[in-house]
Amino acid sequence: MGDIWVRTEFSCINRSKAIFDDIYALDDPRAYFSVLGDLDYMIPDVAEPVVRQILAAKASATGLKPVVLDIGCSYGINAAVHRFPLTFGGLRHRYARREMRAISSETLVRLDRNFYAAWPDVGLARFIGLDVSAPAISYATNVGLLDQGIVADLEKDALSTDSAQILRSADVIMSTGCIGYITEKTFRKILDATERCPWIISFVLRMFPFESLASTFANRGLVTERLYGATFIQRRFRDAEEFEDCLASLAALGVDATGLESEGLFHADLILSRPEADARATPLENIVTVASGRGRPIGPRYVHVEGTEGLQVALEP
Image (tube, rainbow, N blue to C red):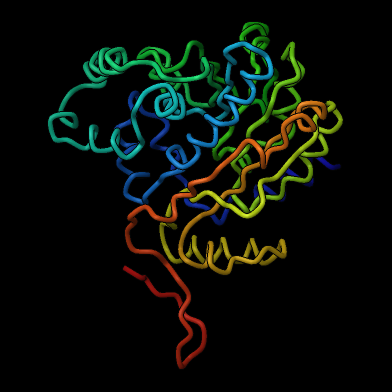
């Protein structure tokens, strides 16, 4: 009953979020950057310095360059901003150019392969990816952002033997937005396939409860730490309905949105799950310093304004 309840709860909360399925089903990321960029999507950029600090701590503990499994990796953007001196914002401007919009996907993939190969790889890890989108995985592997990619929906399907073989080497599992679309059902299958006790880095929108996942990880010998005192901006709300529905979901969980989501932005928590000995040796607050994205320029945001007729939604420039 527990799995069914969690999937049902996540499904209900997800109804309050805008659906962008179409931008993940294309052969290249131009629509992805256009649509999400217009909403000031920034979680890859604000997460990267924190991910880098955690990966450095992991590498220091093992003496090895870790292999990161990026769950919900889409077009490999987390790998791009970590491995190369690039940002989501910079890449968005690259793909928005009229010359780039006019060429075929095949030509773009060839150009992007050369583009990424021209940059020095300053990353602390190798990346493999998991996503339900075959075109996104194909792009990310073809341009060299991911060493290997897995196309699977582990909420519904079993893990294939070939995919399990790829996952064996994962030292770190990372998610910057897919929790809520996936549950502990996916994580169980991944953890069953890994040879090591991986660290799990989760950036989780505050509207999604994490307790069931933390319990699943605890059953695998992993303790879960949450970084308190900081949140990480994902993007602006697409419209007033998404804004209001998110606030309602947070209120139902007893989460105070004042100064955070109430200001028109999705916020995520940073959660790290790993073996207890590792957590004792280097607590999360000793690893991470934060730049949350609050100082970044953004477009108009939905906010609440107290008016003569009560609380109203306004679009603040």
